[in-house]
Image (tube, one colour):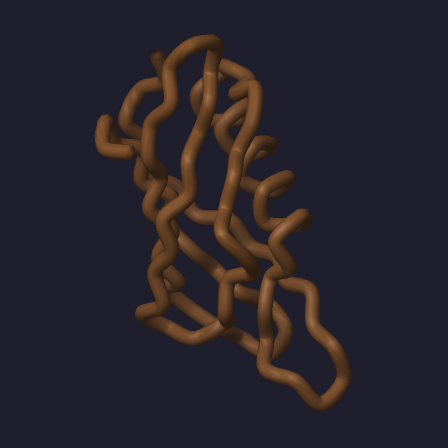
Length: 95
């Protein structure tokens, strides 16, 4: 089981003329990479329901799968600076 974690990630994919957003595939890869770096464990999969809008206060629920365990992640956008979106990741035991 992966432990509870709160951390900050910076990254963003945007299209010209659009609001900052981290596209779904990039978001899932960033979350996975951060968990490996911060916790030292590699999740089998991270699944988010879409891209993360770069707007402070935006939250999203994703799931983490490790073996037979599936647990929840909450992403919360904390800062947006141009094309950079910073967000917290909180791992919990809720699905």
